[in-house]
Length: 222
Ligand code: SAM
Ligand code: CA
Image 1 (cartoon, rainbow, N blue to C red):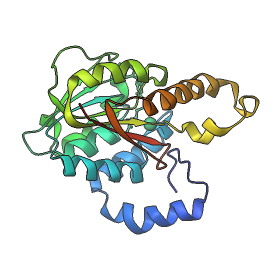
Image 2 (tube, rainbow, N blue to C red):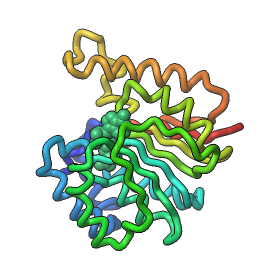
Image 3 (cartoon, rainbow, N blue to C red):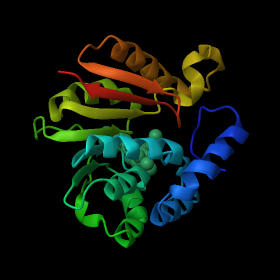
Image 4 (tube, rainbow, N blue to C red):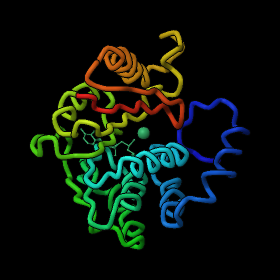
């Protein structure tokens, strides 16, 4: 059973999806990275493999070549992206936590895709490279998602995609405030505000997908 967060309440159904359609098609190096991450501190932060499968499908549909990732951790979504984009594709990946990135690096090297990755050991907010990205994945500090959104709308091409992860925050977006454990409240409020704001944002076409911990998929419309 995956340790990654999921809002799907039926564990049997989750297990069924993973065992039938996700694990059999998951690259060996990704599987190894996922297993190694499970025993790493905060290992549950890795992207859920079923959500990763959707992300890979979208990257392929888009023919994405140049992507941006904010929030790398041990690199599950990074390796997945690197395995999916073409051999001359590029990912700019930002995270202040180099130690976690280096934990996953041997799996990236083993997969032969390190040359596609430009890891920047720094907190994001991306600055230059106007309108040059096909795709961006945001999985970092949740209370900055709207700041990322405003900047990414300048960095991602028209027609490009941005995926925001954890937008349903463990399902807590529909809980009463007093039922939410205190440490989760701040990011729950951030998710509520982000979800409301994105619904009103005519610059993007959106779909909120109840996979993993909630994916908000945005296509830049203009
Ligand atoms: N996408 C990753 C994966 O598939 O394993 C999981 C990312 S984890 C949920 C969140 C990461 O965001 C952490 O590694 C943390 O260091 C990073 N982070 C926090 N604040 C950040 C910031 N301002 N800029 C970039 N990364 C940040
Ligand atoms: Ca996440």
